[in-house]
Amino acid sequence: MLIPTKRMGRSNLVVRLVKGLKWRIGRFLSDRVPDRVVFARSFERTFGRPLNLKNPRTFNEKLFWLMLYYRTPVVTHLADKYEVRSYVAERVGSRRTFQRHSF
Image 1 (cartoon, helix red, strand yellow):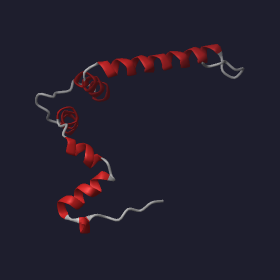
Image 2 (cartoon, one colour):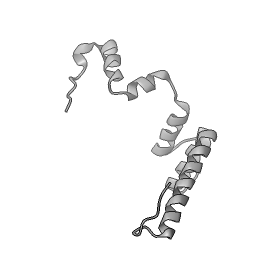
Image 3 (cartoon, one colour):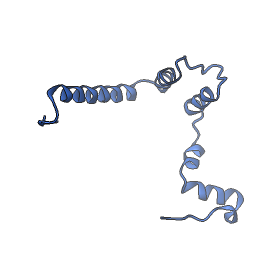
Image 4 (cartoon, rainbow, N blue to C red):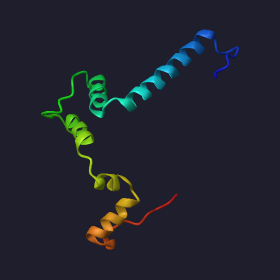
């Protein structure tokens, strides 16, 4: 719970509480709404036009199509930079993998 201070006026506190509540409601609803609807709303909000998943023509529409429909287990492994090393070593040999550098 936010406690108002002298620097933070009441109106600023209310605005922050409303924003937090709006964010929580959005997260709650996005977990229960199908991915297709969430992606379509996000695309339209960003680009100002509806998402065409039936016949994607632009690069962004094709990326959204891939995020929605191309869900294979190998994509999960290739997205992880540590697991991709074992995948590459298995496919083309360990000589082709790069050395890891830790900072």
